[in-house]
Length: 293
Image (cartoon, rainbow, N blue to C red):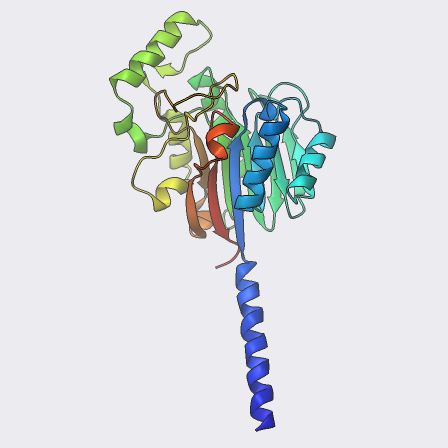
């Protein structure tokens, strides 16, 4: 009888260890344009920390980390339990990445990019954190082409993610972008010579089309049929709180996955809650990714 009890205890321990191991096989990943470095506002930074503590991501890709340095990013990382952080630059509109796990073979690239991008490998997953030009679809085409050239240097049987603020619309959402959106974009181009986001007078889908052509999958669309916007929120582009999330709903923030990574996505979505309504003028996107099949 004693031997049976011992065997039962061992079985329970083994089962518990298996459950723990399975729980550790998933990466929770968030991509977030945080608007001018969270405006360097202590109340807003606290909102972000509360969001991270509540949501518990393993990796956060950040865009618009204006005003941060590698050192202050490390301090922010410590507040959310991310000991490994990297920022692309310290001027303009940097991108950054924070992680619970070490960053391997990382690179910071500013050449030929409107802002910059970061590459890093985390737990066997290849990450590209980007922020494409907000003003020119032609520049975005060059940027996505450059990113995909870098992707082609990675073995195709390894998981690859490209995430961030693409400032681009996807053809899967085409039905949501009618005459009002097109007219607003035309008016913007008439007022500002440096803004050229329309392609022959029409909404451009060619930038993200390059990702489709390269075999990448929009992780939101992997699991969702309904449209969900990533902009606007209850905060305007100057960081002021609004009474309503007014504006044309668009989805310009994405996490794209190659076929290997896409097969491991278990959850995806856009996070809208009491924190993210007011942190930025963008909502964060997220996925959960199995580290192995």
